[in-house]
Length: 310
Image (tube, rainbow, N blue to C red; front, side, top):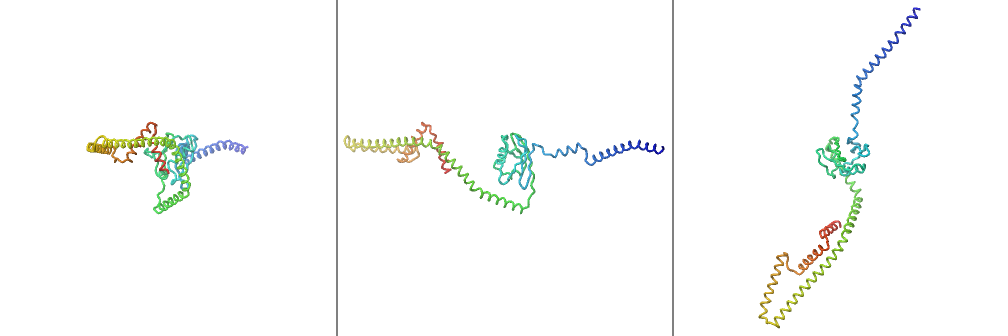
């Protein structure tokens, strides 16, 4: 009986003691966890702050090539653009961005102080400093990682490799470039000839009329000189004598000299029949062009452009 009572007393006190030990161990583990990990809320917020924001633009290097990661405005998803520094330009990068997402209406790249960077700038030069990317009037600050400075020997080797790659690229794509250039020139020639064809027809008609008027004016001048010579001969041999007509012919010759000198003062050209013919032809041509609304300036510009292409 005494042994049974002792066993019952031990069983009564054993359960509370076990619960107390378990509670104390749980509190000790909590305190130990806090000491090792710190505040739980603080650790969660600290881990969350290391995640890249969804609208941030980052620049990283992978296998020596820069990767520009950004969020597309329409699709709302992250997209990586591989940049070839020695071949890609700012303009080609912006075109690739607009081709990837049609929601990109406007895109531009500015310097850190707000100046616009030309489209012909190489991406290798752009990625040397921080810049701003403006997409649909929204500005994003882009920070470029700094490259480690290379030694002089290594830098020289890199420049030689770049030069070799550039020459190889030029040699491999020279034929393709020539074909594209030839195709572009042929299209431009066809376009210029198409614009010139109606103008050439109008010009030919104006030239024919101007030439006819100029020739008529020259024949009229010959007729007037013939009439003048015949009149002087008739007055000399049939009406008066040479003694009377000699002073008359002298003053007529002097008057003609005054006319020729006045022509030189006005036109700054010698009085030659070819110069007079060309001047009179141009006078008739421009007068007729105004009447038919023929744009001489546009015609000359098209002819110059065609001559440059050919």
